[in-house]
Image (tube, rainbow, N blue to C red; front, side, top):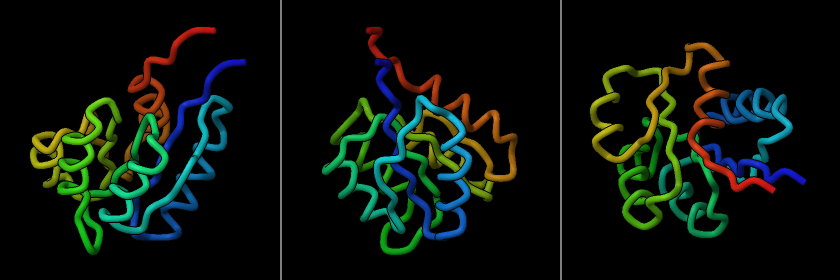
Length: 125
């Protein structure tokens, strides 16, 4: 059986998390393992679940996505971070914090799906 890409969704808006979950459910090789409503939760859930990929909103309460990305990459450098936001101004900051990919939420859904799958190198067999 093929190993699935384990994804954590981090976004403060429940409707966004629900929409991302619905979109990702179209991919049989993707498994949503947890959802976080703020940056602090995302760091805690990465520690608990060790996802392959985190979809990280950059603007969240408690701890923003930029700081959460920085902390995750410091502790778990192999976790891939896809920065996903409506604000293009976060691009440089997100990438400097360690995000592997930066995408705008209003972008092409296929770009998001492709970003998730290309960020993970799954062992065959």
